Structure formats: structure tokens, C-alpha cells
Image (cartoon, rainbow, N blue to C red; front, side, top):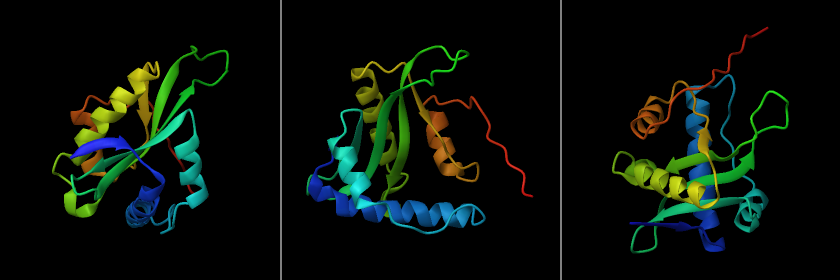
Length: 154
């Protein structure tokens, strides 16, 4: 397996993986999410973005096993924030049949390398509180909870 930037030919598979992700999110929090597809225009824009990328985990045969969508950005320009550059791991998806086989760990290693190369001080991600396997993966790689997002239905 190798990790590399996606190319235009990978976007159909990345789109299918997004459908898996969105279906899982809808199953975990049906009150907030529904099954959906990712916009092909958004994916193409990420390939062309100087601040973002889609990294794919690929078998020697060329099959895409998963991806990480990353974006480098700066902290908000509010007076209370220290100015810092960081990488937002927007999405990480491994095809269901390959979960638990090291693909996610390899993608996280590649994300860290990508972030360091761009001068990021840290990596930030969001994860649904019900997604215990993903939380376990992130914690095993040194991620720690820094904030909580809370909501109350009206």
C-alpha cells in the first residue's frame, strides 16, 4: 500500500467513499445527518487547491482503499486566538472491507507529514461522539479532545 495525492481518475472512488461516510453519519446521528453524495466540483477544487489536498491509500494494483481530505489554514483573526497555522483533517474514510487493517493509520501518518511540510503547528479534526472506532484510532495516534460542541433541541 502507498499513500499519494489523488488524481482526477480517483474522484469517482472518493465520491463513493463519501457516500459510505455520509450513510454512516446518518446511521449514527439520524437527527442531524442524511445519506448524501459529495459534490464532484468540490472534489475537483480540492485537487487544484494550493491549501488543500486529497491523499489516497492505494493498493499496488491501483485500487483506492481510503482517503484523507486535508486543508491548511490559519486560526481565526479574533483577538483571543494566538495566530497559528494548522491542518484541518476534514474527512478520513477507509472502505468498510479494509477497516482495522492499518489503512487509517497509514493515512494519518501521511497527513502528519503533509501538515509538517506546510508549516502546520497542529492537526485538528472533528469526529462524531458515537463513532467509537474512529475515536479509538485518533486517540491511539495522540489526538486529544480540546473542545466540546454541545446542542439542545428546541
